[in-house]
Length: 157
Image (cartoon, rainbow, N blue to C red; front, side, top):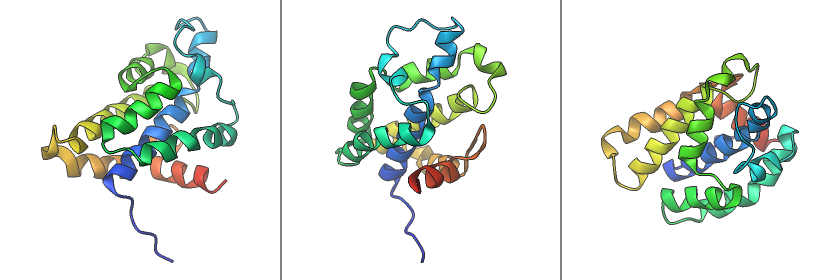
């Protein structure tokens, strides 16, 4: 059975959920004293198990899908987890991820940049690159494979 491709807004919310899901790994930077613990409490409180963490994020994802704009959807996550996308970008750009194996890190910095750019495009502030962003996020890769494959695998649990 063919599945309809997600709308750009749904793709944005899905990628937003993945960026926050992966951000639970901030605990590794904090444990190694590469980042202060303040401000990351809600993300650190997510279960370490990826499937359990994904389950915890779903209420936020559902609420964000009901948002009238991409910025409003992003605010749903920022309120829930106490950090916005630019804070996540700073965390993912931390050079101490360099030695991380299979989680977090600099691979997610570009994904987060693209999610921020898509938010702006969806809200009407950058439509020239809108289609390129949708394609790039649909095809992008992270530490262990394609982002859309990770989303599909998490949703099937």
